[in-house]
Image (cartoon, rainbow, N blue to C red):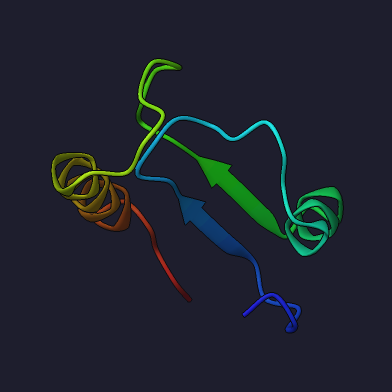
Length: 68
């Protein structure tokens, strides 16, 4: 997905990472990738529960997005 030019949003199922892959950094610097996390720094691992919370957050966000 990062090979294209479309804008993207990456929603993490953990806290924000401190190191990113070069492709992610490039897309963020080009302002075509938004990375968000609904978790505090203490949430360092992806679990079934954090994935469910992340998925619910995506549903809430997608209810507010207008494509057109």
